[in-house]
Length: 296
Image (cartoon, rainbow, N blue to C red; front, side, top):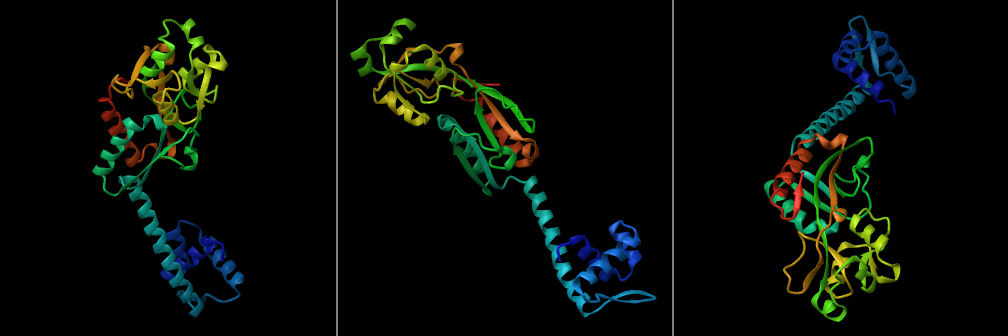
């Protein structure tokens, strides 16, 4: 009972009553219909139809098959409708993946979008790992660094964020304010633990500052920010996320080589769905109001 084509053929024969009628409904040759019915009867070891001059009449076993096949056909029809409906509505799950540092900007937009679509469940996944869009792990990925080169992904430039070096007032009172890049060698720094991080500003630190001066390392943006605010040393904070200068002081202004480029990445199979297109349009519109973030 593993060949749905044969069962479906027998269902149409039972429903219509003739081989020619079933063949026309299925768009196949009448010999295919006869072959399917004969093969199914042989596999089950029972006659499903009584053959006569006017056509095929289901036996008791055939009638049972007709009822089961009818229910299965109805379920497939309902499933097809649900799948089409899901593609045409903004409901169900919307899975967005981004870096945690983006949360202050992104989360209010996700909340507002969900409020406009009460049937939507938002899942915001913040992780450095690249979620596999080809396996449906996320609908939209906001990624930093170089553009994705995976052939089945749709990649759109989203914008760029600027980063500057900050430290606490207490730290600068103890260690002094660096006046040039040469002075950095005498200071302590907070840096991402991975020298190959896609963040250009952290790569710059790894390449510019002596390794022994990279005294606090972490992999989570929130931890890195907390370390700056706790006075562990000098560290990068995005200009859109930097607080007013009561506790933190800008040590060095943003530079072009520290600019982080962001991309919106979707898989081609989901890119054109109503849910994804609605969210992308909403995100781009709302992001235009972000300060110190240049939307493309």
